[in-house]
Image (cartoon, rainbow, N blue to C red; front, side):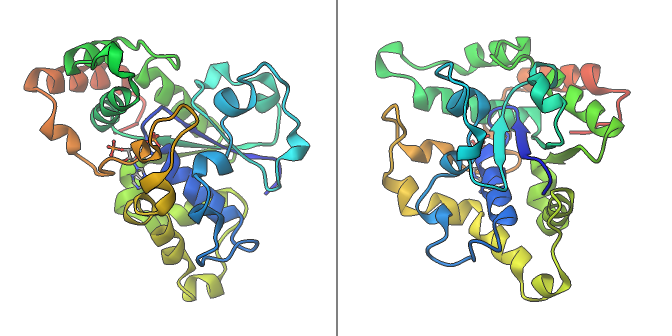
Length: 264
Ligand code: A3P
């Protein structure tokens, strides 16, 4: 892969899953899929650093040479907030988008799992109001995905636009697109040997969420690392959203995205 690979997501779109897949894909010659694969001992968030959390958080300019090649990074930043160095580089951007209803429900659960007890829980209505109005460090959900979508249409060699739903439903088709985009396509021998399925199995929800490091591990702030895994399904929103919430999300999605050829 020339340059770096950068995974971009709006929070709760399946970042950890795509990190696991991208890491395994680009390193498959270095780390064969067996029990001592790095994913068994390290969280994908440790294997692929995030610009705004891991690299620049302490106002330090990171030393890219300390990051092993092929270099992978991640970010939640909106397209127009990416640093110039990214825009001017040969880096490849992989954007993973998820439908707004599941993204919101996932976000609401996550916020509550991370909240310290004395703050009390965040109600569904309160969280909905913030999501709907775009109150987030990364801006409104719809603008985030639309900017990357439009840029991916203009420059498909540079930005690959994937959806959580397609990755779930047609995993092998899209993992092959991803491998090709990142400059490491599967060879005929790899396909015959079942490499595509092996990677998908290694990175599957069931496999990752049952690894010991998630069952017992802690994040740096003390929360349990299993907070990254909840259900990993499409359509879980039906259990939580009121008809009014569904109507409002459908309307804003239609209003913001219609005319751009993006269906989510
Ligand atoms: P749910 O809360 O709907 O279950 P992020 O990594 O961007 O924070 O996204 C978290 C969401 O991705 C959670 O969704 C989580 O369960 C889901 N997820 C985590 N690992 C996954 C995997 N291997 N396959 C599919 N979904 C996964």
